[in-house]
Length: 475
Image (cartoon, rainbow, N blue to C red; front, top):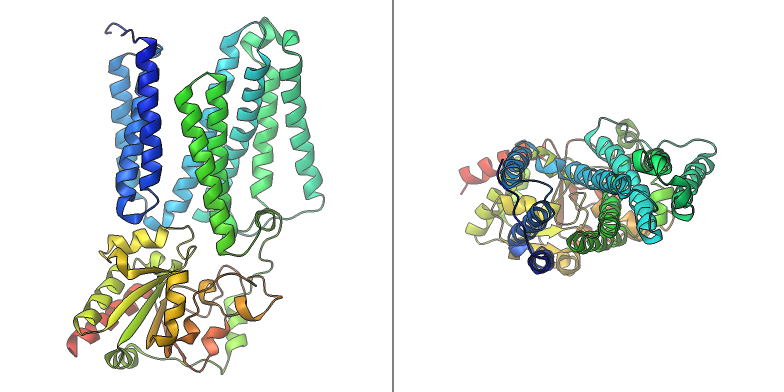
C-alpha cells in the first residue's frame, strides 16, 4: 500500500473553492439545452475534485483505492447510461435522489458514532435533520421510482386515519431527535459511541414515514414528487456537510436543494396545482379505456396515414406536439425525419413543447435533440400558442392532457387552469394515439371530438414511419 499524502489546509480550501465554482458554473450551463451537456461535465469534474481531496486529505483512502473507486463507479455509470431508456430517466433520477439521502443518513450516523463523549448541539441538530430528511428521501424515492417503473401500483393508496398515522411516525422521529440533541450527556460513553440508539430510532421512524408519504400519491404526480425528493436529498447532504464540517458538501447540497425546489415549483405551475394538492390531493378516479370509448362513441372522426399525407401536402405551416406516448414508442427519429421531409418541400415545421409533456421539464427537448431536431425548432408553450391560429396542421403524437381544452373551459375539471398547448385553434388537428385511453388525469378530452380533429390510431413509431414512407413515395 502506498504512503498517504499530506495535503496542507490551504490546499483543501482551494480545492473546495474550485469545486464550488465548478458546481455553480455547471448549474448555470444546465439551464439551456445547448450548454446542458457541458454543464453536466463541469459539475461532475467539480464533484470528483471534492470527493478525491476529501478522501486523500483526511487520510481516509489511499490513491490506489480512490482510483479503483473511480473506475468501478465510472463503469457502473456508463452501464446505467447505456442500458436505461430515456423514458426511464425520471425513475433513475428518483433512485439517485434516494442514494443521496441514504448516504447522508449513513455518513451522519457514522460521524456520531465516531464522536464519542458529548455531541455538540449544532452537530446533533444537523445530524437529526440529515437522518430525518435523508431517510424520508431514501424510502420515498424507492416508492416513487417503483411506481414510475410499474413494479408498484400507480394507484393512490388511501386509508382511514392516514394523516394520523403519518403524524405519529413524524412525532416519534422528532422525539428521538430531540433526545439526541437535548440530552447528549446521557448518551455519552458506551451508548453513544457504540450505537447512538436514538439516532437510529429516528432513522427507523423516518424510513416508515417516507413510505407513508409517497404511497398515497398517484403515479401521475410522481415526477413532481421526485423533483421534491431531489430537493430533500440536497438538504440532507447540506446538513451532513455541517455534521462532518465539509464545506464542499454544504455548498453542493444547498445548490441541489435549491435547484430541486425550483424544479418542483416549475412543475406545479405547469399543471396549475399547488404542492399541497399534489402531496395530499391527486387527480381523483381514473376512467378506463372502455369508458372513454363510450364517452366518444359516434363523435370522433378517424383518419389514415394516406389522408394525413394529402393534408400535409397542402400545408405551409405545421406544428408537431410530442408527448410521453411518443417517448415510450421511441418515435422521435421518425418524427424528426417527417419534419425534415416537410421542410425540404417548403413547409415551415416547428415543435410545440409543454413543460411536463415528457413527465419532467427538458425531457422532451432531450429526446428530440437525440434525433437531431434543431433547438431553434422547439418552441415553448408561451411561444407557440399564439401561432396556432396561423398553423395549417398540428400533429399531436402521444400527448393528451397537455392539449386538453377542458383546462380552459371547465372550472370543475381536475386540470382546470393548467396551461395547455391550444392546438384546437389550428386549421386541422391530427391526434395520433394507440387508443382512446385517458391521460394521466383520467378525464375525457373534448379535443378528440372537435370538427377540425381527426384521430390517427396506432403506435407512434409505426404510424409516423408509415407516414414518412408514403410521403417519400409521393415526393
